[in-house]
Image (cartoon, rainbow, N blue to C red; front, side):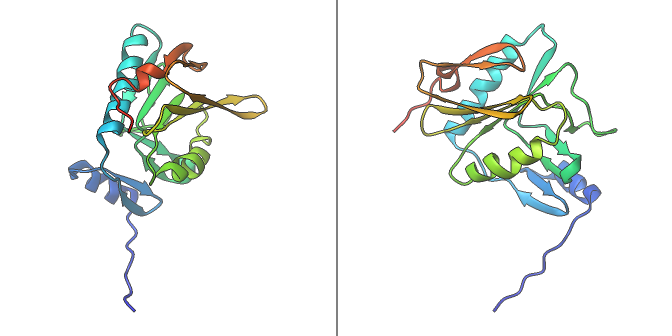
Length: 189
């Protein structure tokens, strides 16, 4: 039997490592977890969504940010990199950190077989602790299918979208996101 020693990292140690790292890692209350690499489909879908938001939301109070910026979730002591975030007005930085934000209104995660359960369950639960968070999109890579969660007075409402002919009404930013734009250039087997 082989035993391994698990090392815990302080938040400052994690941030110092992350500033110099070639790849990205999430911080989970003392644990550093490397993020897996993406796929061509993942990159196309993320780029499509970010570009669509960037163009449509220009000259508005909203700003879209890609996956290069870390979201800090204080209640759970977690640092994560959502695929796309939208902020209502200015992103709030975490203290003097220029690489961490606190206040997205909308978060988009592109699912893979390895991350789907985490995105649906544990990350969604953590995201809900963010006061500004109002809308969540979970985007499938291998078929045109999106789950939209929207914050309501009585809780979170789930709406599914399947097929390229539909559009998703995004209440948090008052725009329509066509499924055809999400999956532009994506080939399904």
